[in-house]
Length: 243
Ligand code: HEM
Image (cartoon, rainbow, N blue to C red; front, side, top):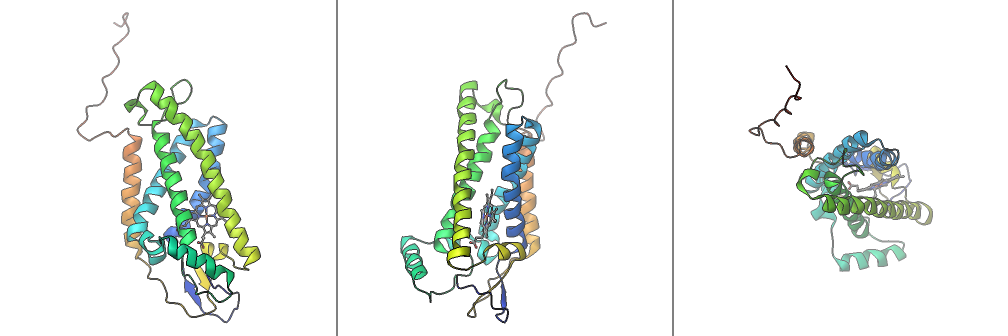
């Protein structure tokens, strides 16, 4: 990405509001989810996990119908493009990339896949005494739930490793290539040294529809897949000495 700090260069709108809001929510939620799990605040952990699930579902939908720089089809490229990009990094006059570069694109997929797997495992997980389990825990046996809960713990370490790599890459661009990737993720705007075609931004109503679908999915999963015509659970029988 041929970015510049030259104040005379025109700014280009790079990241839309939904991408930025979802991104900084991820950055906030990952440590919060870790802390709530470690400190045994499992009710809060489950609720924050459902918020994470809605955000991941939203980002997956937005990757299909969102702005140009959010769309998977726009930034996922094959090995040849990655090789060219890496070769270009070594020369000083490589063409600017507007959005995720071919390598960064795959790291985005890696992060989103791990987050999606992690929230899915959480739905089936159970705590040690089986009291504060995920809403879909009732669908699996005790042993399966135990195995899924262990995978849920391993998943977190994998997320941490990928986030560390993510931050190392951002640090590399900052220090070695003098490119500030963080400000555009905050403001949405970026200056390029050469004129670039502005990415198309999707309308916010489309984001609202995706948010409703993603939120609806999270709420439905939180009910344990209840359907409107399901009968409410039967009341427990009264105690024997009830008059
Ligand atoms: C748990 C923490 C984090 C997760 C899970 C995460 C995840 C992601 C994801 C999925 C993207 C792709 C954005 C999209 O297309 O939707 C991204 C991009 C980005 N993230 Fe993070 N992130 C985390 C923390 C951070 C932090 C702490 C920073 C800054 C200090 C940061 C800076 C960035 C930047 C600058 C980009 C854009 C990279 C580019 O220009 O291609 N992230 N992150």
